[in-house]
Image (cartoon, rainbow, N blue to C red):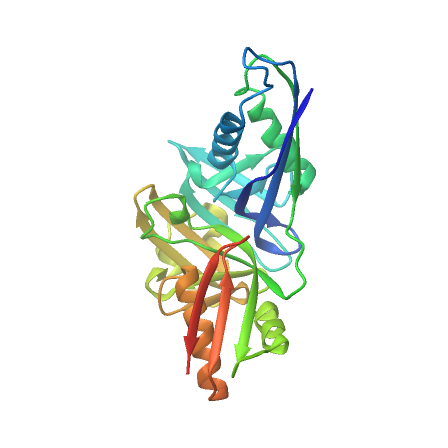
Amino acid sequence: MQLFVNDLTVIDFSYLCPKRGMVGESWIVDVVLDGGLDEQSMVLDFAKVKRTIKQTIDSIADHRLLVPMANNHCQISEQNDRIWLDFSSDKGDIHLACPAQAFALISTDVIDFDSVNHFLLAALKQTLPANVEGISLTLRAEILERPYYHYSHGLKKHDGNCQRIAHGHRSPVQIFVDGVNDTQQEALWAKRWQDIYLGSTEDCCEVAALGLSVLADKITDDSHYGFRYQAPQGDFQLAMPKGCCEIIGHDTTVELLAQYMAKTLSAELAKHVRVIAYEGVGKGAIFVAG
């Protein structure tokens, strides 16, 4: 007997890639369970499926930075539940020092659907009841017919996992100028924020002031932006290549990103602008300017 649940959850995360650097992503999760019937004549109650599987996936992958541990571009040290990470990419070197819960360390040389699938399944098999004989996951990106961008960020004022300094989303954007859908502007913003780190001015600091690894000692303020903040989960530090960043004068919540895009475009075009900015799949914010 099989039980399936489509669109069980969405994982919003960032991952490290030797070519693209830090990439924000949003993947939809579908699940199929194999097993015998329990005393309720069910493989597993739908409510328990959603609760148990979603909670497990969220706890180990959602709003984390996924790290390909077996990749030779990656170096990690860990002490007292804190991780120092160095990663080299074609976009420049990335350095972090954060609480361990900000990361998902995966034994692979590449972060992709298959490697993350295996990582999740290994954890899920420890949480399901005995009558569940097998489980399979499908991880997939939302099919989009309009421009989208991949962004990473951190929200220090958030009391949940959004406070982690390097998590992200794959997000479409809709822009209307004087009431007309402007696909050219959508494409321009998608290009502008392709694989971007969106940092807040108040979180910027000198790179030399960060407590990163010895490998990070050679980086300078000329090549990297430094970011640091204290949040409920601990002290978060990041050095990112400047070419991969856009610094914004306020927090990077989706509400304020929609406002930022609308106000920026309205000022540039001297027109009425409406922006629908998404945060991953099926949620977001709307702002009108001009």
